[in-house]
Length: 44
Length: 443
Image (cartoon, rainbow over all chains, first blue to last red; front, side):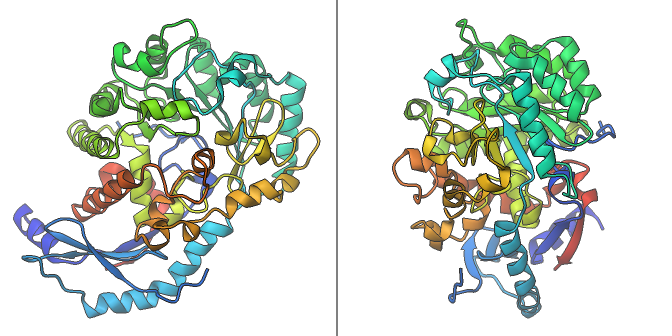
């Protein structure tokens, strides 16, 4: 799908979604402040 | 609390998008507007009806049934800095007590005992005043307990040495560096050291030493001096490979903080500008910098239970998912309550953590909810911002008053919905976050 069509779709479709964390609380690395520091290097 | 007037509300995000939202469980949908008109599709209503009960349960459990999972420990009440907005009373920071090794060891062994049958390791954060004043006992504790606990340290970096950085990396300790601006001139107006200078030089040296370490974050306290320079700070931190920055508002728990409070509107405008800068840098360089407090708002919408910062949920996490142990062993719901003796739930050297969690002051904080706050009880965004903070409002005379930065939150939440509509979520959360999340439904 080209960019123009994508943009058209974006402005014409209702959006709704809901996600659940597979790991909760301490396993989270969504934005580590403190807690489980990922061992894997973040992609640069 | 049962609310019989339940349903979807409608509000405008901008000229392109309308928001429909159930404020009780954060079922939301963004509806395209066409010359102001919009349509709510039947199958979206069906989706809402189908998911409503499940989302209600999820929100209820997140608000009331999450277990304690984090303990902040202030191993010293003293500080080598004198920031104008600090929530710890000045007298305590100058002459406060410090834990001995035996005391810290006792506290941690009690915490380990409390969590011995928990499925996950507790998070222990060494926090305010300045924990590195007792560096030796901190590092000794991390060595002894690192297999049972996850550790974090929040520091102004004034006492940080290169070998400390190696230690922190080796033990995968989360590290927060306090830095308010990208120039010494502005930073040192608010991050003032006792010697009269600021922490700029040491904090930047620390960022260089950490060199993009995954557990590194910077905490910036937004105040009247730096509020219009947040975007510059993001650019600077990105150049230093910092993966995460929190641009948190100054808390007004101490009266003197009022003097450095930024205005809501100017703060919102500049946070949005900083978010735009972070996204542009991420797109251009393929290396992320995430604005943690904005990411938390995004999560509050798309995955409310994945939130990690517990200030933005009602009741807040204080005395619920975390507590603070002060240098004299007192257990308070949150560090913001240091200096308010009436909020002590007991002393960790004499009282169990369970007893503190069930104490009257802890219950009082857990009972401070948006349902009891005028304006919040009818606000659509009440479970996205959570109306922080109880300590701040208690200090200002009425715990059941709305957030000081209410207007700021409203603007930021609307912007978060706009970012979702524009498909920018992937730039605003950490790269690896989506790997840990599963889609429960998608329209």
